[in-house]
Length: 135
Image 1 (cartoon, rainbow, N blue to C red):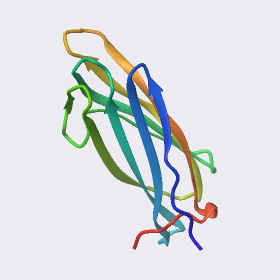
Image 2 (image 1 turned 180 degrees about the vertical axis):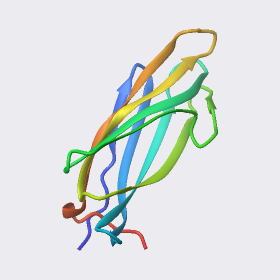
Image 3 (image 1 turned 135 degrees about the vertical axis):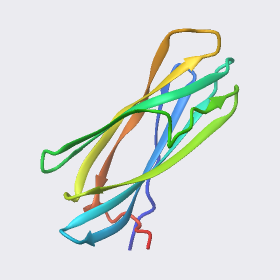
């Protein structure tokens, strides 16, 4: 029986980030695992913010490290008013059944020139955990 994926949450100042991994497909060609992940970024501050980019890292159990240090979110630079949130999902193929996902998002508060790093929660990707798979 598969378990529902668990959401993990982190908070930096008044910005809350929730994350959830899902094993999309296991045993693809060449022992590949296709992982999906979902992120929700909530602006609980009193100021409008803009999401500028991300620095996400994945380190797998074979010692491979992958990084996405890019601007925007699939071409978007979302602006969030107080109380609004932005949802983002994507996939990544890995050759290992286990990995760790960690990193941050870059934001700018309305009226400020300084860019802030907002931590995303660290979460594990483990095919052995019995994650629900999507087909």
